Image 1 (cartoon, one colour):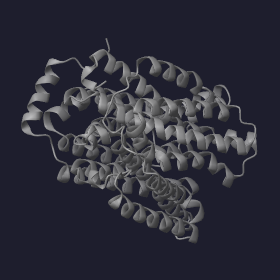
Image 2: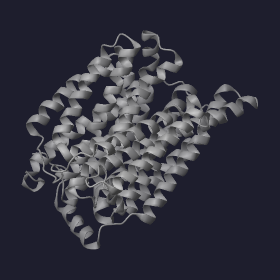
Image 3: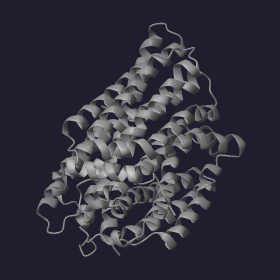
Image 4: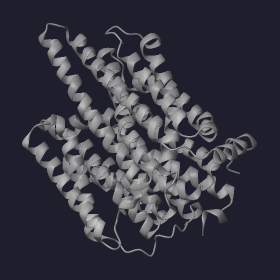
Length: 489
């Protein structure tokens, strides 16, 4: 069936299923970090090998996002979404009962593959299901909140489960959620036709782009450990670029390309992905480095860190679900995006002045409030802009590209900023500063660079995104005033 044949209730019910599935994936990217010390002591990991608990997931997740989105276009987005959910859930069970390092790392790699499929297809299905701009704005607001707030939820959940139970439960908790999403998806998730199902799969292109993304992701996530100028890092990045160049040359001449290069002629898609890379780098810096500041400098427990992020999450939810959608419908993409990213930059700059003996009310809470406002306003327009002028038959591909941009931007930005922070900490220690002063000074530099990323994203979005026409904006504004915020029944 087509999206127009679905009732409003069917679309919003499908949105709930898709968001719960995606939330499970987003939470899993951060929930593990809190439990790493317990996993290390229980399974006997070394400090170096422990990184593979995270890296195994990130490599397959980043490597298969684009391919997963395109496969959804070709073979059915509903079918692939449910396949990814089953794979992720089964891998979570294997992670939860792991009794060896090898078993856990392999299961984490399968988790990453399932997560890539779910992440790419959830976003794509929302775009296909919600074709009217007013409804799409509201749906994107919900999805944007899940993407932006899920990481903080993972920190909180990881602290609670690890403190009260054991690290095994950070994975086992996915079982009832994954089962519920699968059962509900089989019953209520519609199979919407996009028009791409008759195309053939470009196998050489699929192998090339996946290989390139896996190599690039591997190089980035191991950059700090191996060194950014090491032969391994430079060699892998060079190989990834060479394979990508070969992929582009192949796609330009093959009759049924995996990635039609004309998709990058869509101005908003290309610009939104540049914004996404910069924005993700800033967001990862804020959440990861501020969590380290709270734990290592202020002495917060994992549970207290999660609670510290809660005010920002609640504000982000309120803005994503209501105000952001209305602002996009009334003013287009550029203004709300630029304003939201600018507010996020102020949040990072606020943290860049947090002292060694900082207090939550003065030095942390204002930043969390600001990031809640900025993130809540910015995610909706950047997601909507990315998909605003893409044909339905390429929605999965565009979703894969957008998710890849966010993931690679976040991973690369975090790796670079963590290196900068570590280098600054080393310099301050050598200059005679105390350990806490040196740590704090390193974080300050990283927060300033993260703020620069957010400002750059705001400028790019404000200058180069194309707003909807005045007629579209007026029609959307009228509908926003006439309709309630969210209705499932």
